[in-house]
Structures are given as structure tokens and as C-alpha cells.
Image (cartoon, rainbow, N blue to C red):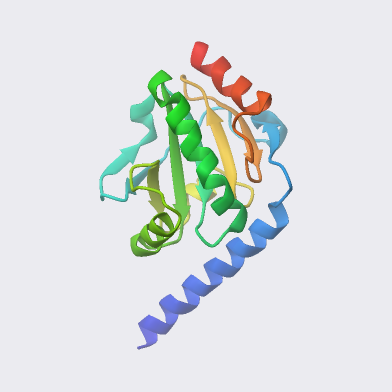
Length: 183
């Protein structure tokens, strides 16, 4: 019983912490920041997590692709609103070499599946990775939820959108992605 209460308290603490981060980072539009401006390493940190099927996905195996790494949670309203935009990015640019990795924070698979089903998304809309202990979130130095990193084909972090990307058809978003895909 003590172990159960400890786990429950830990889960509740994580939800509160991430809720606070979401409120602190929320803005009407996502704000683009170059990696250097945020004192981030220019090279993307390691990222190896299991997807919803239990298969390990390692970002190092995606060299040569442009990668969008999005940190999100189903309880984060801006994340929920942005999810369709991310799926649209994957659909529009996947055939050109873009991979969108949606890294879910501290939620169990059934909760993620409930979110997908309740919002009309298939399991395969995006490559969803489970960051149960928030280790990837911490190592990537994400700044609240949602935070989205844009990684070049060579593995360089080009920049970060802090807040929800509300329009993937905007010249800013399309321009940055299309420029990297052409390289």
C-alpha cells in the first residue's frame, strides 16, 4: 500500500510540475528561438525511447532525415490543440524525409491511447514515444509544454518552438522545414 501511495504521489507531483511548466510557457503563438539563443548544445542529445508498440526508437538511426521532436502530454491543452498540426506536418513532409517524434511525458500507454481515440487519431498518426521518467525531457532541456525542436539531417538542433505551433502552413514553419529538407 505504501508503494502504491508513493507512486500515486509521484505521478501527482509530475502532473503538477508539468502543468506549471505549461502555464509558464504558454503563449498565443509558438515562439521560434535559435538553439544558441537558449544556450542549447548544437548537436541533438541522445533520444532512445519505446513507441506505443513497445519498439525502441533511437534518434541516431534517423540521421539523414529532418526531425521534429515535440514534447507533449495529453493533459496539456496547448499540446492537445497542436497535435493535429504535428500530424499534418508528418503527412505533408514525411515522403520528403521529415520524421515527427511526439515524446509523451510521464503518461502510461492506456492514457495516450485514450487521448488518440478520443480525438480521432490513429496509433500511427505520429511516432509517439513514451518518456515515462521525463529523462529525455530533461536531457533535451525542454522549456515547458509543448516544446518542439527542429533537427537537421546532420543531427544539429536548428531551433526550438516554445509553445504550441498553431499553423504549420505559415511561412515561418514551412520555410524552416523546407529549407532543411532541401539541404
